[in-house]
Image (cartoon, rainbow, N blue to C red; front, side, top):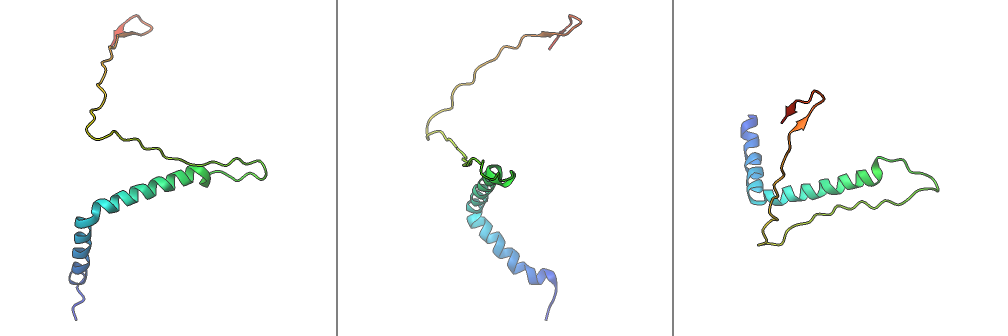
Length: 93
């Protein structure tokens, strides 16, 4: 029997590669949503001590807004920057 690690693990690596090629985006999106839920859980109650009798309920919410398809983003505005003066009355950019 051959116990070469490369020969034993190659079928596993090929199976994982095939799975990621087919469904990698779905796995990524799932991990992102789970991470957001975990972060909101930590900020909501995980890092603070529970107060007895005088506690307020905190409901963590993550709001994600998206533009409707086909709508262009708002135009960028230009900002004029005036040179500033330091305490020696020298103009700097």
